[in-house]
Amino acid sequence: MRDDVFSTEPPALAGILRDGARVGFRLASEPRTGSLLRVLAGSKPGGRLLELGTGTGVATAWLLAGMDAATRLETVDSDPSVVEVARTHLGDDPRVRFNIAEGGDWLRRWSGGPFDLVFADAWSGKFSDLDAALRLLAIGGLYVIDDLLHQPSWPDGHGPRIEPLLAELEGRPDLACVRLAWSSGLAIAVKRA
Ligand SMILES: C[S@@+](CC[C@H](N)C(=O)[O-])C[C@H]1O[C@@H](n2cnc3c(N)ncnc32)[C@H](O)[C@@H]1O
Image (cartoon, rainbow, N blue to C red; front, top):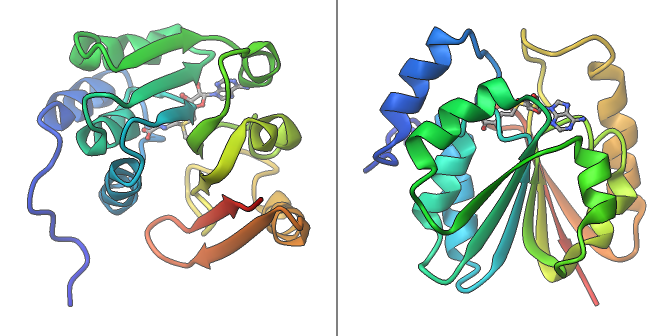
């Protein structure tokens, strides 16, 4: 079986990738990760979803492609220049709200209730502020991280933090966690009662 075959892609994806290349954004999620996010988003009808690290909106587009009309997505990034690409291509979709903020600050300020899926694709909510992110996860909610296999785009200090992060997730009694050495390297945890 090949795993790089996608029956459809989000309609906005081609434009996002084109404009992302124009602004020099090299941190976009890869299609296999996106296709998984689309499936997971579809498993949460009427749900509340959170993405930390909007970037140019690649994963945002995949998440939106899996969401039903009643599901809502908050996406957070500290860099307005890359989020502008996402807004250009996805800003007309009423299901998504773009938040320009530092992720940890945003997590601590959020008062809108728990999330059914958190895609933590920024430093905060993953290597920092992990408790703040997991506190906002609903029972049965999914916490998803990627970039766990070596990537040329890794910033300094990324690699040595991965095993401690996985150990922390796997050591928590309120989570069940799976490692996926696939795509850029993923882990998914579910919060249990
Ligand atoms: C890996 S990229 C996100 C890629 C995007 N999710 C996608 O699928 O294409 C990480 C993003 O996190 C943002 N970021 C980094 N540190 C942050 C922080 N402390 N708070 C909020 N955003 C942050 C960066 O501006 C960057 O756009």
